[in-house]
Length: 65
Length: 462
Image (cartoon, rainbow over all chains, first blue to last red; front, side):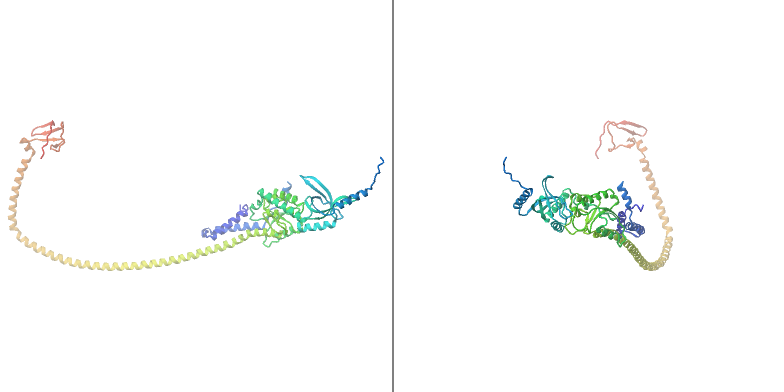
């Protein structure tokens, strides 16, 4: 499920959590849940920065086909 | 037929033509013509065909000569001013001399070619391209595309082994932040006559696999600054403007911006700058992510500290309030209990006084009543006897009188004396009774009862 999430969505959700926190809209009650979620989102985003998923050979095959 | 024939040698004729032409065309002329083919020989001399076309039909044609020395000078000028090589198939403004050679025949010897005229022609093409893109409403089409948050997958149109490409790749690969890009090279000619078709073909290829890419870059560098006019070509510029992915250009030159660069999503002066732009896009993503990490941890800490502080304050306030409240209650309780005590003591004192007083009064009054009673009792026997006799006699008379009156008043005695009682519906009749003609009335006499109907009624006023 997390792997299918696009980095754009992860980035937007993360920004929203930060904004909510700055606006004081996160209470102590949901702090733990939000922080856990933020950590997941940060992990997804960082992974996207340092990984590649495309394969030149696959694209070449597609071009020939 | 004894005609005296003058016979010329071919050389004489040709020399005569040459002489005539040389006399007739002494000066140099500026001629506007299309150079069909440069036709350069290994010797360095060029023998281009010059033509004039009307509606794509050749209406004039003549061979020309450009001597190696002139050609080198002209090419140098073109590279400096027009930034383009002498291009076949374009119209040029040439300074020519009309020459006739005994063996090679008539030709135009090109002394000079005006580079500013060619420059003007190129500017014209640039303007035309801009105008046509504008007219088709696609001038900014590529720039209106959404730029991906992370331009990770890059289709690179460049010349293999070129300096521009290696500069670009070096900046991407050796970035200090550890960002990783996926790049794939689509090799193409990036300047000169071949560039338009070559770049277009690679764009078509990329379009077929566009789901694998975020952006397309066109990078060039290190190849000198001639042959850039291909980037003003309408077909190529249209292909760039209407491409479904953002196209970024970094084709490194110092002259006027080409149309291709203008319609591209973004233009960087050099491949290095273009690579930096992609890294900046990554930074724009990475920095907020890293900041988010800090912001969330410091925000959480602050929130917890704030809550703790708030809770501590509330606790202190509550403790104080409770203390104050119980203090106040204690005081009030003391006051009330004091008041009760003094009230109660007063009341007890008053009641005790009242009781003392009452008990004295009571015994005094009792004694008095007893005294009076004793006196009264002493006087009762005589007067009691007299008053009782009198009272009894009066009462007897009164009883007899009443008995007579009652006997006289008995209705039976009244009826016996001849009176009767008339009733209607059980009530005695008087003026108030509702007696109408025909009402049944009852008449009671001493020894009979009559039922009769009213025939006439007459009331007496009082």
